[in-house]
Image 1 (cartoon, rainbow, N blue to C red):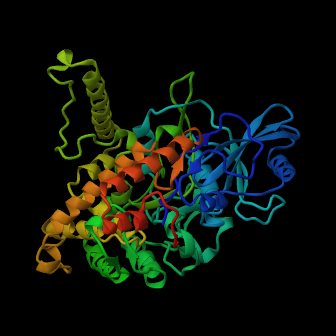
Image 2: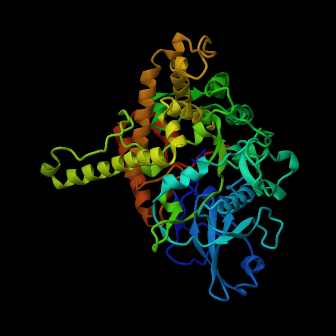
Image 3: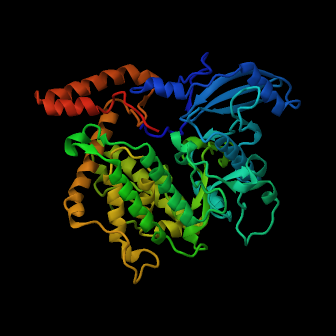
Length: 535
């Protein structure tokens, strides 16, 4: 299965004459499938007329349209009106999913957050159904004002953490989803503010719940008053259902197949997911009002590419890309945005302002560059925690929990599709079993999950080998030009990447020194090959 598409939009250098096709990069493997997923055909004149429906008469007729950006899930067009006013039209690919829910939820989330004073693009109109003259789903919205840059993350996140949502799921206009799928927008202790008449919480728009054939499954997607425990259970149950129906025996890709040879069976993964379900009730406090369980909205990808700054005031003017946003228990929503992650994850977290090395001035120029970069990242991490302490104490309290990340890791791994890998989920389970005495309300209760001595014997060494192989694969991806998990590479790097991939494979074949077994493992599991995909 391919990695899930990146949400980062790639801005096109100029308008293109291929409005229906993906032109923002190439794919080293399974390119035909990736391009087919991103092909959207429509009538450009109909798009202009639909835009006029939402924008006129204030701005006159729509006069032109141009494709300006493409991401992992959407294509963005710039529409210019008769008076020069411009708006963007966002159209999802077929893989964006879930149909209706993704567009309906994004439009509602944008409108709701904007009404709360959060800097969000204005929505002029949308269609969450293909039943329109255009024949595709779309959102017409304000062009993001300001300069793309990162600032004031913590203050924006504070506003998210303070909204008293009533359950997990995603935000919708009540008019867009059936009554039986609606849950109250706010918790029972929150007074009426008018928003509850317009908005509700409905099924999660999280891509992982709708990917591929999951869209056809009868799953619990948090559709009605879903509490924290039910949500954690549903994350694994969707993968149990998928693995039982579609999972098949697999051999791992190279180089994993050289260290962990042979066929891997989905029944092993099913057993691990069953163990997760036994542990779930003990991962979080039983009190539904615990801050750890509080339903919390967070931007699905809060990074500098999605934040715009006013060049006049230096403040955040717009936050974009809310597709697939979800409300989930706070212990899952808490964490560091990518730009503020700890560059020293193996070290204890101390609130001591970082300093440059004592011998910094004597360092060679290249070492100074490296020291400057790690110092910059340490400062970002340090100040992110400081500002949370001042502005967003509920988030800091979650970040301080010593078992926050082991629990998050376990839930994340239990929500992954079967691909032959049992190492990471098993490792996450073993760590939670080790921490059992420190989980909430477990005193006097025996851990409901155990592994036999034979299952644990040598596993630590196996897991370290797995991590080492991950590092090798990451190195190969970097070595060939930065290929991502989808096989994506930029247009200008594609030819060079193809050459480097061929050179890498040739060097690995040469190092096999004619050993037919080694050569067979490489050929069958070559990382950059076209492969069957089951979704």
